[in-house]
Image (cartoon, rainbow, N blue to C red):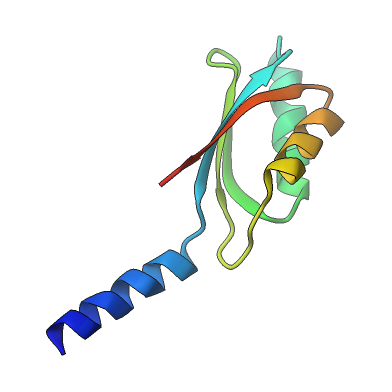
Length: 92
């Protein structure tokens, strides 16, 4: 029983909490770039806690609970903002 409750907890945490992402972005030069990328990622309705760093040329965010975002959706959102995603990393 002890092992079963531990397994249930692990499975619950895997399904309730979405993945975290780190995306390298090409073309950002100013704070308006940061604002545009943040806005487009938020418009997908599948992410939260979006942080875009101009200095690191990177965006980080988490999937919303129960939602999954694909790499194609991430690339499309960043492209719509006028930039390109050069590398997408799923971080656990």
